[in-house]
Image (tube, rainbow, N blue to C red):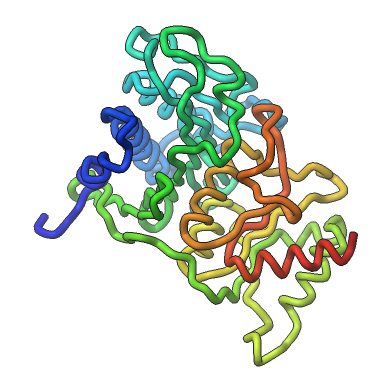
Length: 335
């Protein structure tokens, strides 16, 4: 174990970054890490037990719930409820916020917004999936019920955000506004260990990630940008590589390590965008910005978008600053 820093050790070492917190945020991040280990265990044996396929229900989005969606949602809520540092969970799988009713949670100071299992439609075919989470400090007084103002805060108010990717290895990547750090799960000791300190998105990106099957439904500016990415030009090392996994966490994780842009525009079928602001776009935008990149809806910084509803949707363009800014230019020229 010499030279290894575990997630728990790292969180404790960074506790001084939060003078207003007396260990609560550290314990909350620990609780999320514990739930991630449990979900990882089930994801990795998905082909051996009865947790593949549909659960026979739909979530508030009208999307079919997979059995692992339901399982992951239950595990994260259970861990956060037991930990006592979270007063309410806003989950993709629930129409309304889930208020923590246990006695240990009555004075909890934090709100968690979470997509328990992003990309779950891929689990049946053994493709990487993930968890996305966002943490806010409550605005209302402790000891009373939280309200919508506690939950619907701007992305700039996040105190922490992160994702877990369940792939060939399992990683937890998070930020508290002081850089991005990645931890890889070592199954031999059951601990997340610091493997990617101070992560920065490469300055030059040569990958674009988008579901080109919806090309006919994209705004003209996005179509023109895709054509630009596909044109041959030695000075800009084009054409760029097209890589699209279909799990937001997996696509973002690759681009964070290798450089690139992730595009999820509005379409004629989804004029307001499809990704959810509170528990998908805000946390990922926070991470991308902390890693030196840029995150917008094409016209506005994602973290500045005013949240009005829990399941609000938005377009999202995240990645290298230069690539995102060029995409914005294409969109503005086509207005």
